[in-house]
Length: 452
Ligand SMILES: [Fe+2]
Image (cartoon, rainbow, N blue to C red; front, side):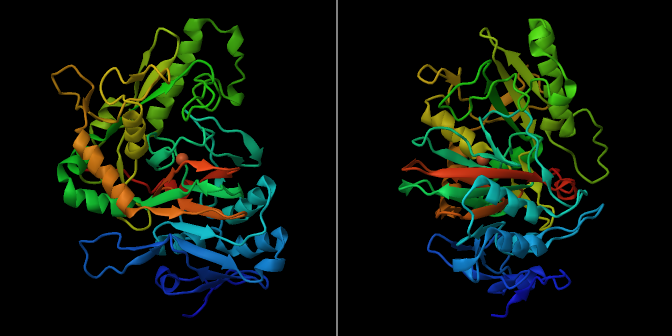
């Protein structure tokens, strides 16, 4: 197959069709990237109902030529032509074309990256070199439930939950209105066993679920999804959701607000948290009119917005209502964009599928997702349980379609978060993965909720 050029001056850019049939990506300088293969990859059709749609290889694996003597500086220069160009409106980048043609993920292997700073430089090169709506910006967390520690510019530890704990499938912050467009992981130390990152394409998941559990998919389209997130007062170690509700990256005062939390009364602290929760709901469109100009109606999630319950110990349960299915910005197809996979799995694993969804062992809440009810519903309830067999079927399809990415030292996995869910399997050994989250504002602006 012919190489696809991403030249020094970025003038020759591959189309998605060209990329799909290519085996190599020429980059800047003397370095090119060559397509490689690994047994963990999948061949799949995103939409099975279309007989003319070709299969894609998921994910794309790329290795640099001259890998044995490649320096980090040379690597950084080599990937720059893949980045988006500065623009006030959305334009397709070479990297996005590669992702679109391979199910939404690119796994770079045989790289000289050894530190968080190396990874940070690599990601900044992919981000584009100027601030504009079309280049990548740092993702700033809001309503964050997990604990992460900064390692380098826009690089932090991945979820610090314990090694024996698996993490179910999810789009990064697909349970919120505020989520990154791109996430990337880098392996600074591989595991001895396990520790794969299973990934699944959200468009394929929507396609299979629509065919096998249509009532579930149609209900998400009409209602959306409710995710109840428990935020403790103080940090909880060894938990996959132990972030303090008063942290700046959760619902506490942000650095810009310059508020001394200790100077506030309990009532004032709670008011500040509640305003931040409402801000998050507004970010997803709650409170804005749904005039139907785009055809169709938004779901009950849009009517309900977010709500919360303060608990006796001062912690809070936040009810986050989101669309659950969104249209992929460049491929124009519906995608199953949510966190049903990991929230259902936690709830099941901790024996919390039934009310009050509280684990005495973990001293924490693990409620499964639910359907928001329309405002005109007369039952008085805000949400309705999702039948467990429907979430079980979604889990079955997720596992059937997953590719289990295996890690070697220096590997980087770049994921289009709007197209791909990720997960984590347990491991033994010194596995160390770091993460980098980015927003491409022009791309996120095109990520429309599905309408009925
Ligand atoms: Fe994640």
